[in-house]
Image 1: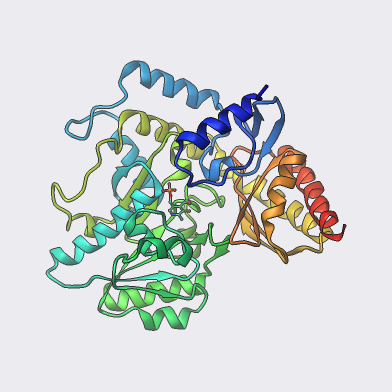
Image 2: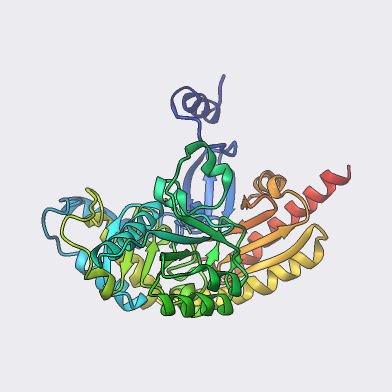
Length: 403
Ligand SMILES: Cc1ncc(COP(=O)(O)O)c(C=O)c1O
């Protein structure tokens, strides 16, 4: 007889478009940093659904407000006012320094909105500035605009032609990006930490070069904080930590704690160039999304989570470097707070199933990197427990290679 897992997988194989190569486990329940599969096996989650389950799984407070909102009013569209969208926008404004928000439902939509707003800015000013500078090793999403500023040919090639006028420059050469930004550049888009790109962190010197060139030429800066923002590094936004001055910012992932929410934040100067009807979304900023976002920000700022991330992050840093020192396959440890990459001198693919076998969920990105994005609520004791399992998994992978 087929197991529950075999039934689920067979049904998907027949009817779900096959775009994801899933790991062969079926997750059915969660609590905090723990997940359980259909066979009752427990895992410590160092990935949080790629940086989304920011408050841990089945967070009781989030569950309560989501249920309350579902019993009150979920959705009205943007044709009417509701009480929560302005509140969420105000809270994001205080946290980011960017006073206006446009709400959408995902990271790629937030990037898409930023690109459109940058285009609209120059159109309003009557200038034909449409060129965009993006970074090598970038990932901004899968819709056509976001894909156009994503560097990986593997993602791009099947969908060509993409937007024209995009130039990719190295992510670590201040003098090159400074030269590339001209009076024809509409905007520069950058992830302060390139998460999909293997947890590559921009430096303050690189940020300063962008700031200087953009100030000189009037070019807009879009900080894509979908992965690095909202407390992930222990800072509200990593762009501010490295001094990158953005007029536009894209957010997603952590904001809804699992409820799909995205946002594009804008400076007042850019916002003034946007007119009624320029952009829209049926779902964007509905009551459910805003209620979840408000609850997340309450926890992050009011509930002391930001300070906890800083503390647990330093512990993570220490323990991860100690782990790396025990494994010759680890070449480099990169990250901060609760976003980390272990860059290996082998393909990291084998670490994922080895981790599952040892009861820890991690992700492989940029071929050689084991990426860790745990729930922001993870404690020191849970870090120790999860890293002990990862330690075993890395030993298993090393042994498999020598056998
Ligand atoms: C920096 C960045 N931007 C945009 C996206 C796209 O977000 P989504 O998958 O929610 O569309 C991602 C997703 O990983 C991301 O890391």
